[in-house]
Length: 221
Image (tube, rainbow, N blue to C red; front, top):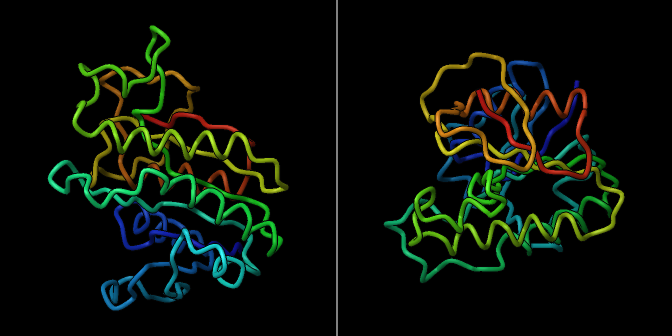
C-alpha cells in the first residue's frame, strides 16, 4: 500500500486520481484550499486536509510520511475567467514549494499534470505559439505552465519528478479504458484523446512502478 498526497484533489484530475488510488488500495491525503467546499471527497482511505501548493512553509508537514505527491492544481478554469487574477509565476512557485518541501520531508516521487499547449508541433515550435492549435487569448496561462516545467527541469534536487501531459481532447466524462500510450515532447495527432480516468491510471501506474524520471512525456489514447 502506498501513501499519496494529491494537491488539487477537488478538481477533475484530482478527483479521478483520488478514485483510482482508492480503487487500488492506496491511502490518499486529499489536499484542497477549502475543505468545506469539497465535503464529498472524504471516504475510506482518503483524508482531506487544507493546504496551499505555493505555501512553502506548510508543504513539509503536509507531505511528510508519504511515498509520492501529485500536483493537479490549476489556477485557471477557462477563458471566461480572464487573466486579472492569474499569477504568471504560479507554476514556478508551486514547483519550488513542492521540491523544497518534499526534499525537506524526504518524499521521493513527484507527479505533475501537464498542459498540451507546452508540447511541440511537428514543425518544432510550441503548440501555444500556433494560434490554429491553441487559442491565442489564453496563451498567458500556457506561458505560466511552461515556466513551471522549465523550473522543474532546472532544479537539482533528490526528488524524482515526472510531468504527464494529456492531449487537447481531455474528456471529463470519458470511460476508464485502463490503457494508454506514452509519447515524447511532440504533441500527439489531433485525433488523440484521453479521459481523466485514464490520466489517473497512467499517473498511479507511474507511482506504483516508476518508468520515467526527471522528464516530461505525453499520455494519450
